[in-house]
Length: 392
Image 1: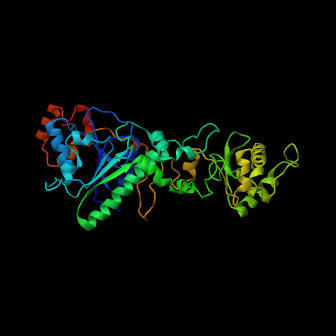
Image 2: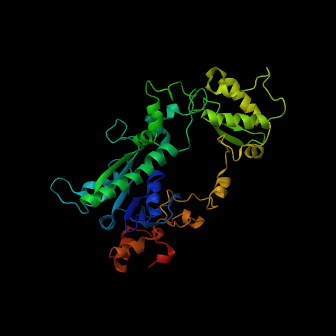
């Protein structure tokens, strides 16, 4: 696989850091998650990873973590700025500073923060919604007439954070192949969310019409009746995305033919293909489509539009989407595919016991059983950190 032989140290975190590690693990990297001794974990983005539970707050624990990082290619830092420095594990320790040599100058040190490191919010706590708010993208998203809404925690945490961190890691690895030198990769979720949202943000600049109108009145933000989600008679939904005139014409032909005989608005109004470009008619068109879909079930409308170029498809539940996937699995499969066989995720692989691989990893680093027992006694690792299969 593409990243076979690459060793990654992932300090335990939530959402973006684990997802970056997941992407690397899915493509062949050996990813070791660092947990706190005695900690529990709700992380479900841990397939293909190992876990060590070691504290850097003890001398022997700090020494072990340094050895682990020295033996690795990538470090994923999910903490607020300065945390790893205070623990004695900052980038200068490994990459060097000025004339002082580092312990691992080929290390790719990936820093994943919420806010830009030079911005006014750099020391503040935050979550996906906050990062999205500062990116400028949230103000453009659909919602009610009073306020925009947000797409779970996908845009900042995963697209702008975890995926950008994985991309930055791979770019830095390519560069290291040319120079032999590692580097710090800075990823922040505000900037990442802005970057993945380049299309709408550029489209909102003066002189561009795509997102030039007020929120909720543009083609892709819920303003256009022909780019929206509609409720059916059974409470399920259909997605309509016939932006181009030729697709809208197909949609209208199929839709009108499938409605009850004589179906129209109260004043007898029925749409024609030319109504798509007439913004003044959009409210009537939206009302017509809303009432039309309510006349029958999602299953009925699926059959009406299946195989057509109407750009109309059902909104599937997670279980339905898993069945439709080629894997027939509820677990999302690694993507993109490089003609490489990926091991299918299973229920068992969703969870990783903190410290389940502590002994194995320490032995790989050259520690003896007596050393490990001494670390256990000193609190550098804990009983809970050792999985039963590894107990001394």
